[in-house]
Length: 210
Image (cartoon, rainbow, N blue to C red):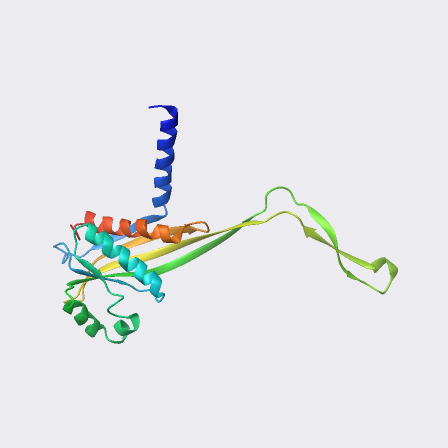
């Protein structure tokens, strides 16, 4: 293997590792009642922003189907307001559409950290801030302004809970808690696919789906 090819392979591997490093599985739980692969599964994302709800539900349905499970999204069936006002009726409608289980994604917590860095030593310059008309030696009022550039960065930690419920008994069968770390330059849309994949992989590993 030539040095150029090794460098290219290492670069690709590094890019892959960086692309999936933002999301991690913090905890999983499985009920003793969860004995068979789930499905058909109705997918519900609790998110008021309609486009974001659709994006997550579409990705879950796609990856669950790719894993061999029957699944469908719910954003075209029920609004969050309809579900909140009558959960029994919402569950019946999902069962009527063929679902036996319900997968719910919701935000548990969000933490945010702002940091500021000023490289180099301190540099100040005098600036005129006003004119005094009283005594001559106060005629010019001076202040000093810091000339160092300030670099700031924002880091968000988003904790999501994905839970699977039996629609007949309303019992929780399985749950996954994930942590996603987002920087200012993180492509949030691109991060959705590996986030959903990590959850679906955990469900497959624990025998919840095929």
